[in-house]
Length: 404
Image 1 (cartoon, helix red, strand yellow):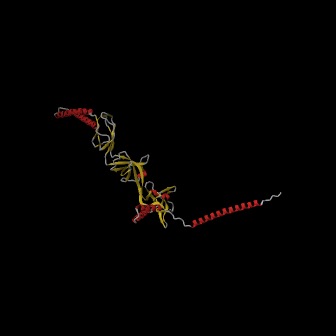
Image 2 (cartoon, helix red, strand yellow; image 1 turned 60 degrees about the vertical axis):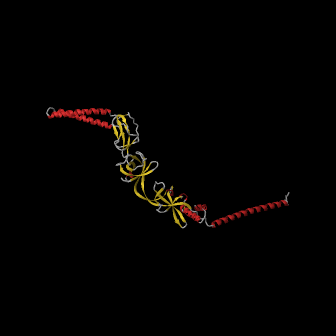
Image 3 (cartoon, helix red, strand yellow; image 1 turned 45 degrees about the vertical axis):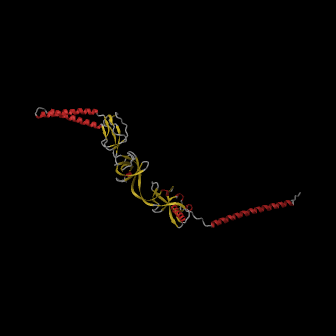
């Protein structure tokens, strides 16, 4: 049995097919138009001139010619020119303490007295014995003149006199040793003594630090540093938490090195020390040694350190303006605000001192200080022309922002 398609169904099918074809053609046309527009935009962009290169605002500084000596920083010990530990030579009971802890004493001033009553009594007894011996010697000599005495009796009498005089001298020395006096002008250390306290022989009483207008600084340094210095050379001191600066002069160097550390001890004299410096304080000693080495000084912020070494950027003049050129440099260790360069740059060259972190090879540079100066001049000229100060300030700010 044959089936026939109705004329109405065929017509609907044709309409649907034609509509689909038209939609596809429209989509293809739209895509072609978009593609043509993009191609035209790309060609226009490629044909357009490149945008102007914006300079990087940095601070420039000139490398300065200087010289440098190697240095060694060690710790030194402050010594008074005269210093002793005061001890008793004889045992005895304390009867008087004229000195004051932390006070100052003059040479010969009494510091401590021990009980000497026993020695004084013995001294009186020996003085009486000496007087008797002197009388005996005189009688023996008179008898010898008239041949009424013997030489042996005179010898015995003179020996007794000498024994008595020696005993007196010994007691006077003992009495003197029980009175402790200052051997030089000094500052007294702290002590804990009381009247009536018994002190044994060799008992430590206190310390005395000599008073003078100078101190000695003892310090140890490596042997290769000691080989390069001489008596009369200066060393530089850093004192206390305030980091006071002072200069001392080497006055002596030890005759041999330490057998364990192989270091050599030297002594420097510090004249007119600061009041806060005390004996046995520690100070930082910087010893300069060796021949001066020519260097170029630049700000430490100009140095960029990386795995390949230290680099600075030099501002070189080109037809298009200042351009950054990287240089590998050799920097002397040490220093804080200033870097000392041995090799890599020349004195007088302009170095990127601040802002080097944003600089790359060949970058266009603008000196921030020159830009700021020109902006200030522009603001001043605007203000001179009768423009209010506030407007002139806005102009300067806009110029500065445009430069950056």
